[in-house]
Length: 313
Ligand code: GLN
Image 1 (cartoon, rainbow, N blue to C red):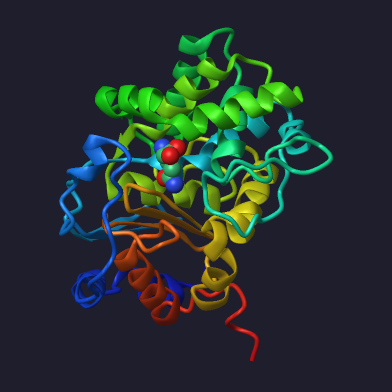
Image 2 (image 1 turned 90 degrees about the vertical axis):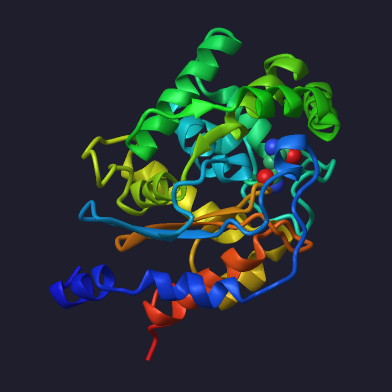
């Protein structure tokens, strides 16, 4: 990165982004489990993690929230790392044009369509190494902590409720069992995935997770190599095509930054070679994307020139 680019990023007024995006109303908080339903709809924060290790944030940056589907890129990364890349053959990488929990597998192969929808994440969580549920949970928590550069913890109430109440996830796991795609029991697959979704972060930790991918798999704050550059490239590619579910095409056209949305209202963004970013604001649009997070991402993309295809002239 050039030094002028660097000073432009570090002096950028994130507070103003939060103020402007906060004006955007609308959206509904997710109601799938009590902890998400009771989230404060006014919480809003934005963070940037630069590849030199500097992290900046504005808004309610101290608020903790569960990763939910923002964990999916990192589960895919850990599965790729643990299987030596074989995970790429076990899960598809095509966008579905459908919602995150559609009960559908790839026709002909019985594989999940991609790792950014629930079917795919149930599978990638099951592919992370560990001889039983506890060992896999442990490996996932350690891996996510390495991405964030700090020791993360699970919200036990969210994990328990999502395990018990995630009927569509149980259905997807059973469907994959019947196709021979899933090696572990359906209940174990849902348990591990639910725990991964329930890992707590704040907006700065999530931005650092995005930055670790953007830096080719090396955490820019701790310096630890978490995954290989090939794994980071594969993950960011699939975030770009599938990260916002049936809104991925529109998102890529307008924001132009590989990203992953989640029902807690979190968004994680990775701009390869430049920065990671994250937002948290619980009200969601009909595709499960944070309404204010989307506006903030639009502003960041335009003002920092982050659109992947925006510098063609
Ligand atoms: N834990 C949630 C679920 O499986 C995650 C979904 C999401 O964030 N879109 O339903």
